[in-house]
Structures are given as C-alpha cells and as structure tokens.
Amino acid sequence: MSRNIAPKSSLSLTEEETEARRSDKDRLLLTSCQGKNCALLIQNGQLMEASFFSKDPGRIGAVYICRVKNLAKNIDACFVEIRKGEICFLPLKNAVSPWLLNRNCDGRILEGDEFPVQVVRDAQKGKRASVTANLSLANEYFVLTMGETRAGYSSKLSGERKRAIRKIFREKALFDLKESKDCLAQSYDALLSETDRRNRLAEGMRLDILKLPATGLIVRTRAEETESAEELLQHFYTLSAQYIDLLYSALHRSCFSCLKEADTDLDTVFSHFSFHEVQNLEIITDQRDIYERLTKKTGRETASCTEGTFFGGGDHPAGCPEIRFYQDNMLSLSGLYSVEKKLRDALESRVWMRSGAYLVIEPTEALTVIDVNSGKYESEKDANDTYLKINLEAAEEVARQLRLRNLSGIIIVDFINMQLPGDQKELLQYLKKVVSKDRIPTNVVDMTALGLVEITRKKINRPLLEQFRE
Image 1: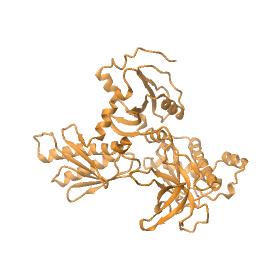
Image 2 (image 1 turned 30 degrees about the horizontal axis):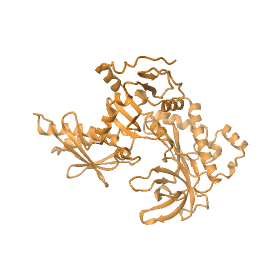
Image 3 (image 1 turned 90 degrees about the vertical axis):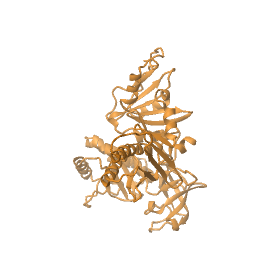
Image 4 (image 1 turned 180 degrees about the vertical axis):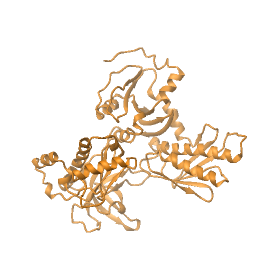
C-alpha cells in the first residue's frame, strides 16, 4: 500500500546517516543526469564505473544475415553488408569457419557469400561497426559459441564443481563420449530436451535438414550456485533451444534479415552489474519504468512506494541483488549521491588522491598517457619509501580510472621513478592485483627501461567522455 509521508526524511538526515547510505553497500544507481539516463556503480563511497544508456535496443549482440561486399586481404579482413547500405568490418580471424548459407563451405570466404554475423562493437570515432561470424548466445549460467566444439569453465568455478558439472553433462550425453576432453555433442538430438524436440517437430520444423556448425560451451561462474542437476540442465536446454531456433530461422530467411535483436542498453547494463559481488549489491533507481522492468526481470513483485525514502527490498531470489525505488520531491537520487559532481570529476584530466599526489590523464588517438605526480604530498621518510607509497596509491587510482572512464587500447603510466628493483616488482604485482577486479580484460604488460608501465585493456564500449559528449 502506498502511504504519503511529509517530504522531510531525506533533508533531515544527519551527515552520518547520509554517509552510511552512500557507503555501506555496493550500489548501482540507475538515474538521469542532465537529461541523460546513466548507470553508476559506487563502491565504498567511490564511483567505480559509469555509463550512459538508452532504454531502446542498441546494436551490440544483434545477429544479421550478411553478404560479403569485398575482401581486404592486406589487413586480413573483409567488409560485409548487414543491412542495405550498412557496411561492417569483419576480421578474418573471426570468420575461420563461417556458417555459409548460399554454398557449401570449402574453407574460403568469397565476395557474395552469405552467413550470419553478430555485432560486437558499435561504430565509433569514424570507424565502422565490427561483427563476428562466431555467434554466441548466453544466459546467466552458460554461453554457446560457434567456431569450436570444446567446453570451457570459468576460472572461478571450484574443481569439485567442474567435476560435478562434467558428470551431469556426460550422463545426459551432452558431451561427446568419444572424446577424452570435454566437447559438446554436435547434433540437435543431443542439445534439445525431449520436450523441446517433440514441440518443434509438432510445429513442423524439419530438424533433420539442420546441420549444426561447430558449437562449443562455456560454463559461467553462476553455475557454482546451482546444486540441482535438474535446474542446471533446464538453464542449458533453454539456451540451446534458442540457439537451434536461431540457426533454423537462418535457413529460411533472406539476406540482411535480423535474426536476433540486440538487448536494450538497460539490459546490457543490468547483465554487466547485477551479479558483480552480488551478495553486497543494491540497485537503486528513481525511474518507475526502470524499476518495474527490473523487478519483472528478476521475478520480484513491485513494492509499495514510500515517498521520501527508498523502498523495495525484502525477500528476493538467491543470487539476485536488491532492487529499490527512490522517490523524494525535495532531494533527487542524483542529488543525494552528488552524481553531477562525480561525473564532472570523472571527465577532468587531473585526479587528486588523498595523499595530495595526483594523476594527469591524457587520452590521444593512439594511446592514453597517465602521469603520476607527487603534488602536495609531504613526508619526512626516506625518499624511496615515499615514492613507493605514492606509486601504490596511484596504482589503485589508475585501476579505478580505467574502469570509470572506460579507457581501452594501449595505456602508458609514468609512475614516479624508483631506484630499487624490489620496489618496482612490488608496484607491478600490486597493479596486476587491482586491475584484476575489472570485469573487462585488462593486462599489465611490463615496465620499460625508461620506467613506463604498459597496460592494455580490451575495447568494448565507448569511453565515458565520448558517451557524455554525444
């Protein structure tokens, strides 16, 4: 039941209560800032990740039947048309065994070939969108991938759990029993449950004409939480049925058809964050339509609204974060968490640290340069200890800024010079530790002879600055 309360609760919060609201949990805020929808991940009171999103479908993840426009063997790629007049970039390494629809595959890709591709990167900075012929479909537990037959497991799964899953899949003949390694069975008979197979045959689907492309499996971290073999298999069969339906549809659709719409940006945001340190995550939004979509997605009932405070919470499915709605006519959610200030700080080139030292972050067309400066830091200790302390603090801040600004490609960090090899080793080890928390693959390569640290980070979405400008 709704109940109206005088809108004083947020304004009457003490400083300690307000800080407790901000810091006691990891929080994902879904709110608006300057007319744009934004998602912000806050941990320990610090903004860790931010992105702007649309409620409408995006492009990443969409599957189209493409036609090869021309080959560019000098760059080991080809250009394909996914919609009339829309050309995308396809690296040939992502099309080793495309599922050709217009002829039998002979190991070559020719102009005019037609096959399904999936959008993996939007067009940005004047570059065309990128696609792959290695389609993948995923849910919270599994990923089905085209291109190879092997089964892989998340590195976060325990050895005991991997063995248990392997046993379940072998008993159901979902793994090829002739292979010594775990390889997914390569027939629709094995991949569909008995019920799904009967239903599709009753609908008139001629599954016998469907020759599956090489298909592999990845078991995700979430599978650690599911003890029930029946529940685990249900998640697999649901995904495999979607996969087979997609392939069967491709056999009967014309070129440039969209076989699968992309998730909305909101769905992508939710999938990225919802199971990140899930035991300590709370999702808060001040937009009712978003709240209702998320509660529906997670199977939770919409809670009653209490004006001037958070609402929601209560019992929710295991592994699902709390979802709360915030409403206050006197103080907005973005105001409570100082969203605009946090975003302005995230776009500044200079980043101050608690010690008084600071970073200077300068993105360029080719790479991003980060300079570490001692700034206002003062210490009477030995210079080597001082430089190590500043650099360790800077390493943690660098890791945060890479996530927050969504910097990718080549990153060069100029830490304060240290003379002791042991200090350099300690810095590199600590930097590797803090960047490992990033959900986007980030690799600390090495320290050069000039003392510059090389980092690479996979490019998936646009940098925060580019999103903000758009």
